[in-house]
Image 1 (cartoon, helix red, strand yellow):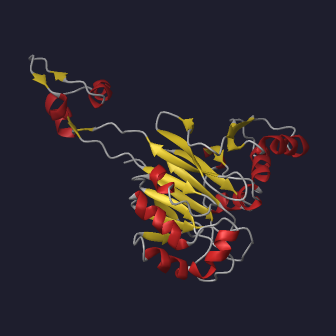
Image 2 (image 1 turned 30 degrees about the vertical axis):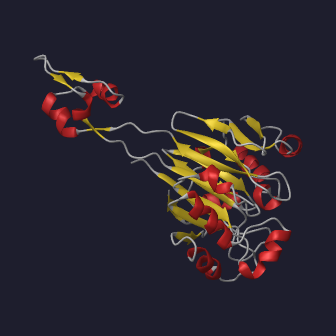
Length: 304
């Protein structure tokens, strides 16, 4: 099975701390790398994680708070200095467009590559990116500014061709793709071999949801049903529930309720308030509701 994992570059909230960077992560899907949010310091974390700058072709920005996008123009500039020629696609709420254009005009006039801006309507769930291997949908969230999350869905995979059948029937390599796509096999002697004898079931398609800054949404789970892994902001614990409500954030327990009701397999907590020197309190509150919960940590690589 090809890799499908998320690399945590930053999982802190707005106030910088010595042990957490601002929000950013890279999702690796079948050899492609997608950046999600780009807080200050992201490009340094990309280097630490040894992710090739040229592998990142798409950046998804959830909302226009600085801890989610202040690192973007610096990274774009660095790409230019490194001689990038491949286009870069920025998917973000519409208000970023004019600001990004102004920054590009001020700081990045001589890029040898094109920056494409794709505005997102944060009020609707819709496909905002698609290629041969996956789709990306926007997930409407509720924060103090227009905000959305992102749902990455792997497209259905092809079945595995059975190696012993290739050898037994002397099937040429150039016919394997056809068989994976459902073709039967006819031997030189005229024997008809049905497809189901030639293949074994495909691996299940995987999915990953990134739920950025948001207050608790009791109906959110309906948009995330059976997602394999959910990253959900958990800025506060139950000791700061009123603060979470005031600033349109979620508690760790509320994040766990979303994962439980969505029948997810795994929950990753992140976007930790600087009030917590030890996030194990948040982990315990979430695991009481949804046991398969882990804490995000910088440089962690988590399989979806």
